[in-house]
Image (cartoon, helix red, strand yellow):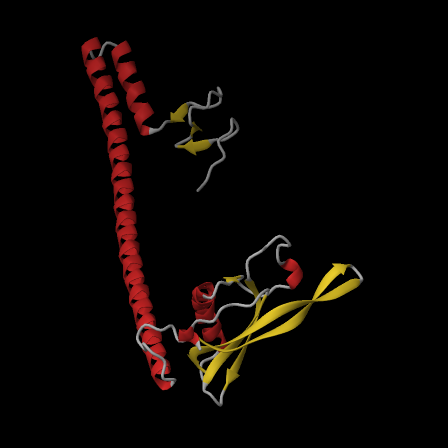
Amino acid sequence: MNINLTKETKIVVNGNNIAIAADDSADFNAVILPRDIYEDVKTEIMYSRGNISLVECKIYLNAKYEEKEKHLIKLHNEELLQKENEIAELQLAIEQLKADLTEKENEISDLGVELKNRRRISKERANADRDIHPKKTHDGYMVLSLSQTTDRHQITWDDWEEVPVWKLRLQTPHVASLPYSTVKNNVELEIPEVLEEMGCKYIPGNCKYDDIDSDRTECCAYRKSFFADYKAGYWNIDIVMTDAVVVPEARR
């Protein structure tokens, strides 16, 4: 039962009024104290009455102090042990996460090797199917056509002009049955080196002629489109460039 400790609080025991927690009201003739405070008060009363010596009083009080200190040290040690256990659990969790991460990295690495091998085998098969040599080292990109066309170039907000550009049609080593997303990702990785061999700089993504730096002197490819040639069995790319390129014999 909870008791509100105020000066008006009274407990009657055997006809006596008892104060709670050292209430100083004159109406009370008894007091209830906590055990540790009671022991200290009792010792001091005994000393004041001459029932124990000063040395005995000091010994008792020192013993009480040491007991409290030991209790505090025990609590402190228990808290430290709890923290150490928590740290140990966290370290175990971290080690497990590291092990899981290493396992996933190995899986990704193995998957990358597997995909690379699959692309290599697919490319070699495509080269053999099209009689491209050497089939093991050729990247599989062949030029089907190179033609001049025009593109619209904005001079002012309401004035346009047509500028001469070139369109390069490439046959990729990727079979037409593959989804566009897979082919696009592979082409983005492979096409820059193919165009660079022919003296053309590749600009990722698609942009307009106006987006090209006006002072650019080198040939650059700035727009591409994909289409699947199901008759031939392979994906093709049309690439729009600012200038013509020299097509090597190995790509014809």
